[in-house]
Amino acid sequence: MLALGLVLNTFGIGLFCWLFFALAIYALPFFVALSAGMFAFRDGAGVFGALLIGIASGALTLAAGQVAVAVSRSLTLRVAIAAAFAIPAAIAGYHVVFALSQVGVPSLAWREAFACGGAVCIGCTAWARLTIFAETRPLESGGVVENMPQPALTAATHER
Image (cartoon, rainbow, N blue to C red; front, side):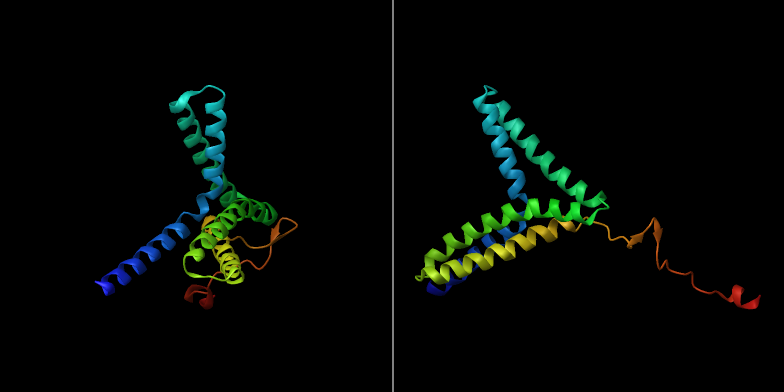
């Protein structure tokens, strides 16, 4: 029974970590959805209306961020948008890892170290998941693309 408990605990913690890394990119849309829903509920939209407004605003935030990163030509704009998504994910990651480390780590210094490492890992994961939609483009200088690939020579061009 003890071995089964250890295996199931390990599996559960692994599943929780996978879930948190998979959901890291949704920290900013969740915050926006929660804020918009609470604001709508406070202004009299009712429970159902606040729920709809919250879901719509969160989905719009996520879609707008992904589309903006995907179509943006400016590297500075891409970095700013990705940072806007990665920083709340890193903050959430810090707090989750700090809370989980309280279960088995007695030292406050080690809990802080684990929490900072977790924040970096989760923030980088959110950054990578958002920028996966960005298309890499060649560097442009004055509107002319440098180092354009040349077509391969075929047998017909050698015969001339």
